[in-house]
Amino acid sequence: MDDVLEPGAHEPGDLSAEIRDIIVHDGPISVERYMALALTHPTKGYYTARDPFGAAGDFTTSPEISQMFGEMVGLWAADFWERIGAPAQVRLVELGPGRGALMSDFLRASRVAPGFFAALDVHLVEASPKLAERQSEALAACGRPVSWHRTIDDIPPGPAIFIANEFFDALPVRHFIKTHEGWREKLVGLDDDGQLAFGLGPEVEPFLKAEAEEGAILEINVAAQRVMSQVASRIVEQNGGLLAFDYGYLQTGFGETLQAIRAHQFVDPLAEPGLADLTTHVDFSALSRAAHSVHAEVHGPVTQGDFLLDIGMVERAEALRARASSEQKTQIDAALGRLTDMSETGMGAMFKVLAVTRRGVGGLPGFERAHDGAD
Ligand code: SAH
Image (tube, rainbow, N blue to C red; front, top):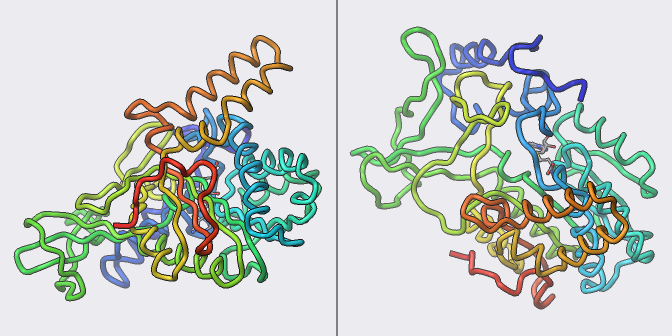
């Protein structure tokens, strides 16, 4: 990878100076604005300025681990398309497609369902021009029309299947802390030395009433809930569905999950904005509530391990093994093991899968072991 920056190499510089200027002019900013700047600032944001994936980058995602991930999603979607009436044209929308690996594997696998493949009109929602270039290289020969958008508002109308892997965890959150007078927002300001530091907003937030002990923290994924309700309303009105995978938890609770990762290590989230990945664990019950609030049906969440095994990943791995070299067989087994690893910190257990549809679509493959994420 030519454009991944090694720590200490010629970096374009972090965003601390820009963010300090904003704070000097506007006063302390919310964690939400800080996260949005650090990730998607037009020139120095983490995603806008670099390609963070792979062993040499900061993290590795499921589609980067194995082609089987995108292939399984493609086969699941081909079946789903039949269930929603096999519309002659369907927008296939991926939110945050990274390097385009999932979509490329999805489309290759979907060729086994020629009616589905022919119906697909691909739309990628991507904030990073750099990653959009990568996606365009990955999909150059994919056989379907592909367009790019900065936000979901620009996707043309019609039935749409939305796919998202590790997208919701990159959307900015707000943090609130319980003080003796009530809930106050956690902000990013400057300390006595002029360095970025966390502090508290001056006002009590009258809209927050939750009972909690002093010092308790509430993390609210406002942006993720907004995207979810927009996507879910569109599905209800125009037909379609959403399949989302993310690192997250099932019940809303107190505590914050913001973390910064650089070169596969945890770092201080305020240390080098723009150079480290900032993510949170996704609150799936908040996403489910957002979808329910617009009268969509929610399937899951289930664990990624259960989902992939239930939709036949072992069989897919067997089929690939049949024409693989012994080295490839070892890789296939390792990837299958990693994606479905149900140990406490394994990807199979930590990642959850959620689908959103119109009401009345019925049970979906992969969601038979669903937990109720609604409350
Ligand atoms: N789905 C990919 C990449 C996950 S990383 C994979 O699994 O490998 C998050 C992706 O979302 C990146 O492509 C990033 O550029 C994009 N992204 C982050 N914030 C975004 C936003 N606010 N709007 C659109 N895309 C965003």
